[in-house]
Amino acid sequence: MNYKRAILLIAIIIVAAVYIADISGLLTKQGITETNTSRVLAAVEVRNYQGERLSSITDFRENSIKGPQHVNISSYRLEIAGLVTSPTNLTYDEIKKLPHYQKVVTLHCVEGWDANILWEGVKITDLLNKTGAGPGTNTVVFYAYDGYSTSVPLDYIKKNNILLAYGMNNVTLPEDRGYPFQLVAEDKWGYKWIKWVTKIELSNDPSYRGYWEQRGYSIGGDTNSPFLS
Ligand SMILES: Nc1nc2c(c(=O)[nH]1)N[C@H]1C(S)=C(S)[C@@H](COP(=O)(O)O)O[C@H]1N2
Ligand SMILES: [Mo]
View 1 (cartoon, rainbow, N blue to C red):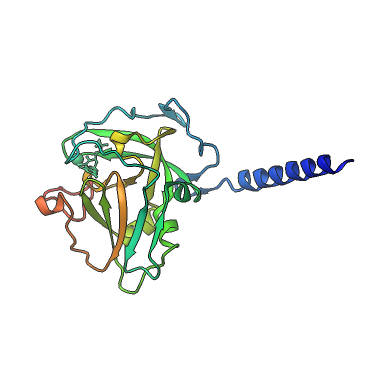
View 2: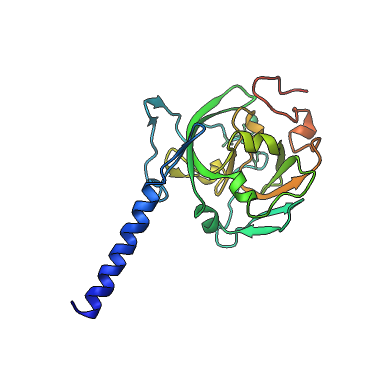
């Protein structure tokens, strides 16, 4: 065997080994699926998932405070700051390289419409593992490109494997829907599902009020309670 063929063979063995290690990592954890199938997202959205009917990525009412935002992905950084041990900035590609998960979750807007979507993204806890959380952290505040903000308890994120989504129904999050990232705030009203996320801040202030919370919506935002507090 000549030198070039040996190199090629070694390369093939490495690729195969990485692939097998990756697929054997297919796991189901607390209702969410870790997947290796859709890192390259499709051109056409799925409308059924394991027999369940999904809404379309166009079944939303666009009513964001400043309309759809355009985020330049080459200069985009997700900042993770506040009560962290080591603050960090991550690019879109760095975040997409983290383990990714899928779950079907319904967004309920206080205006009375819902959307049942197959979300795909990374776990917020995986992001926070990069920075650490200092003593006293109990709240996670999210900020967006349009000046919007909201907060959720750190415990809620940990207990529910809350995702930061970059995909919906197997397609990349469209700009109108929050590209590059939307928080999948399951069991919470739509105003907690912050889009165009630019910053995650760890805080010790559970009474932080974001955009709609300052205008009277509840800080907890649970869909099983009234949203006006
Ligand atoms: N950055 C940002 N995120 C936001 C909003 C917004 O105005 N700005 N609106 C929220 C509200 S009230 C709802 S119901 C959902 C709706 O998602 P959609 O605009 O994709 O339909 O986005 C949430 N996330
Ligand atoms: Mo909403």
